[in-house]
Each structure stands twice: as C-alpha cells, then as structure tokens.
Image (cartoon, rainbow, N blue to C red; front, side, top):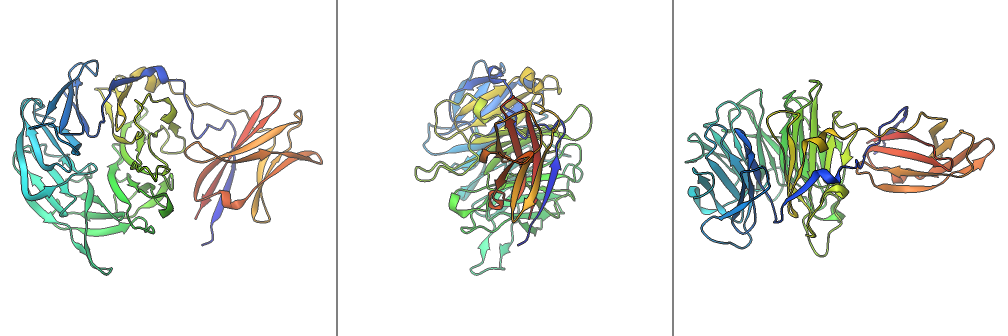
Length: 466
C-alpha cells in the first residue's frame, strides 16, 4: 500500500521523549509483584494493591508501610488484576483476576473476604474488567474472559447477575466466542458500554450491556492473538477515547500500539506506538482545561525464548494530547525482576497539585511524587539553522546548510525514544548531506536530530501515514 509522508521543520522543537532528571522522586514502596491497584477517594493515603498468590497489600500512610492479607490461603499462580474501592462506602473492596475463579468482596477494608460471584467454571478478569457505573455507584459491571459473560451488580458488588453473553463471531470458520479483556463505560451516557476483546476486537452496547455489536477489529496479526486490556475515555471530552493493545510474539508484527476514537467509540484509528505492547492507562484534566494529561504503561509477557516485544517497563506521559511523550522507563527503580510490565497506573490524590502517580508493576509498586510530576519541563532544541529533509530516489536525504562546524552526525528516533538509524553527514559543495533509507520508517512520527561538533543541534519531525 502506498503511504504519504509529511516533513515539518521544527523551531524550538520539543523532544519526543525527555528523560527528565527525576529519579529521586520515584519511590520503591512495595517490593512484590503488583497487578491491580485502587485507592480510597476519601483518603488518598489508603491504597490497595492486588498481588500474586492470593495476596492483597494495603497501606494507610501513602506507601510508607504495608501489610498483607491473603484470601483464604497463600496461593500459587493467581494474580489479582482488578482491585476496586467503592467510592461511597470505602470500606468495600472488590478483587478479581486470572486463575482465581471468583469475585471476592470485603466490607472491612480488606481484613476479611466473602465470595460475591462464583460459577461452575473459573471466571477470569484480565485487563480492566471490573468497573463501577459512572452515574450510579450502586451498580458495577464485570466481564468474564472465559465465557464472554457480562455481569452486573446492583448491590455495590455483594451479588451479581448475568446480564448478557457476547455474540459468537461467525464471520470466520470456525466461529468463536468473543473473550472480553476489558470493559469501560462512557461518562456522557450510562447506557454506552464497550468491551475490548481477544483478537483485537471492540464491541459496543447502547442499552447498558444487554445487547452487543462489533464496531471494529483493530488489527489482524499472523497469530491473531492481540488483546485489548484497557479502553479509556477522556475526562474532558467523553467522545475521545483510547484503546491499548498488547501482543506476545515479536514475529507477529505489525501488532500492538495505541488507537484513538473521536466519535465515542464508533470508529478507531491507529494513533501512536505501532508494534509496542501496552496494558495500562490513566488520565487527568490539565489545569488549563485544554485537554488531558495521559500516562500509558507497557507490557511484555515474559517468555524465556521471547523477551523482545517492546513495551515492558515503559511509562509514557504526554501533556499535549499525544504530540510529545516522556518515557520514564530508565528512571524507574525496579527491583531486579526480569518482567517490568506495568499493570495499573493511577493518579492518586484530591487535586492536580497534590496528586501522585502510582505504578503497579510486575517488578513492584513505585510512586512519583507531586514535585516529580510538576518538575517535568520540555527540553527544547535550538532554532533551525538550515536543516531540512528531502525525498531523494525513494530515500530521505538529510541536508544541513549551517556553517561553522566540520563534523556532524544524525540519528533517527522513534516514538519510544529509541535510535533506529544514524550516521555522519558528509560535505557536498556548501552543505552537508546524509541518506536515510525509506524502509527505516514505519507508520508513525519520528524525530531526525543533527548534532554538530560545535555543540549545536537541530531537529525535524518526519511523519509517515499509511
């Protein structure tokens, strides 16, 4: 398929990714595998983290100290991927996850646990699969991965009823049951629910989960194994939403990435980070009222034979609706676990100025304090002194007409801040030139940076749209 490219000269261009010197603000607060996470909206110092082996961790002092409760007994492979605190009765905590088989509920802040949902099979809740109704907190929804069943509670999670089962996909042979990995509700309409499923499929309900229709299949890969662990709608514009996709095998590319809708979930387009595997997301309105601050967490299933899928350990942050991103991957003090996948991200706190960013990862739980969030500033490059990109025989030519430096190099950076190509510029007449093969660029936004021996730098962005 033909693609078009857009070349933009950047004046005072912000770097796509900035490794801000904020490592001191990240705190190692829980040295245990961490999955689902929730906080008490009436007391932000109270945080619950779902762990492995039936463990639930609790802190009542903002992460300085923790205790551990086990549901019934110390388990083996169970992972509590969903943790929910009721916003009205904050003593009510609900958990569910993978290989656990039930939904459990506590009415005493996690000291004791009752079975709220049990079936003849093991129900499983993988991505963000247990949510509270935006308009009526007495109602909750849960999406069971194993049977494709949508459950609803009208009793603050104490009891659950089967609401519907997702439709069988009959457009292929053999037909298959849709398996939901996540469920979300649009904030502007309590009737509109969406589920993100295995095989990169999104379904939508406009009658509070009673009936469903497929709206899109984001991508078909060679193995058709992508999952959608979270669909997240903007807090300032509920018709803008993002779908995260995760995949497991590097050879199944193109795959993964972040998708965006601007019409409330009817149509979805590839947005950022192709071939990157994600799991978690959160946002908060910017103080200016112009859009949202967004964070997204990467995910890679840890296989001994396949650990190169991009994503694990990345925490990406944007303050300008996705034009510029910071990657904190190399700034987070993980605990030596080989798997750093980020399962839950939450802005925790009452106001923008006091909120902290809490990351529950397979390598442990970390917190970025308010001063760390506030301290990020855009790094700016100098004004363009003559750098430009041109198409040349199917490739891209880097041209620099600035005088005053004899040695200059260039590099190409992708949306994850990785250098994917580079080299020297060589003098030709009154300018310096270099060549970038077109195949270096996939679909997306790239940054081409020139560095000169006199210490000056310039950059342009290069956008490829398939």
